Image (cartoon, rainbow, N blue to C red; front, side, top):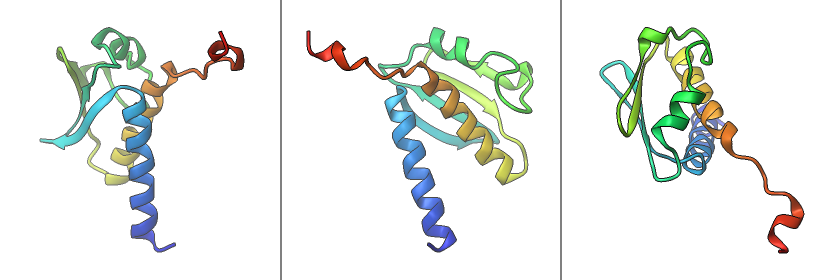
Length: 106
């Protein structure tokens, strides 16, 4: 697969996982990764999962929470920024646990 097509597939897969984790949107704004919470993700849960030290190379002073979003300073290196984005989604999706097989059979 050509590199641009591979990157597009990676971004699509990341968006699906983020949506499943309760993220309503993700964007880059003014050198920050902005992750907005949807109905399935509370601020309290995001704060617990994105505690200082839980993201590689990110200091506590580089993370700011608001009522419906978190802002994280992005590294200048685009590859490290992509890796940070992946790490944020991975941390937020840790709350997702598959249901046991018998959970739906009542």
